[in-house]
Amino acid sequence: MGSSFQEQLLKAGLVNKKQVKKAKHDKRITKQQKKGTKTPVESSIAREERLAHEERNRELNRKRNEEKKRREKLAQVKQLIETNRLTLKERNDDEPYYFVVGKRVKKLFLSEEISKQLTTGQLAIVKLEGKFELIPASAAQQVASRDPKSIVAFHDPSSDSPT
Image (tube, rainbow, N blue to C red; front, side, top):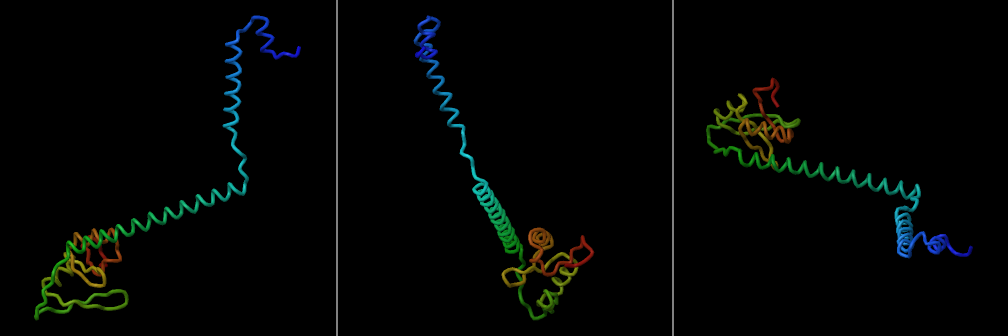
């Protein structure tokens, strides 16, 4: 009675040594697999800290992505303005064109033709790096879709109110 069940089966001739060895091997493998699948019980404090850390990381990533998109839009606006701006030649017959920026009234000396184009919405005044530039209406609409704050004066014919 001191012998194991496997030894008894072996003596009785119901199994051979190869089968006993395979059974022991399978038993050892399943025991190791069960041991490997057990995860240590995570304490509620550690879990809460981990979740809070992940939430902070997600929030930081979201803010970084928003800032990156904002910088990309500003770079696109700058490029649009620089590529489409009109070069003005100062002449003696230029008249002042007045427009409002915030609570202040600013003026640019423009020819009569350019003033008409501004009032009809063919041109727009935009601000780039502290300077006022004139750009065509098509470029002004693209700038307005990316950064409406850059548009200083634009009498859009498609809308009723001037910007």
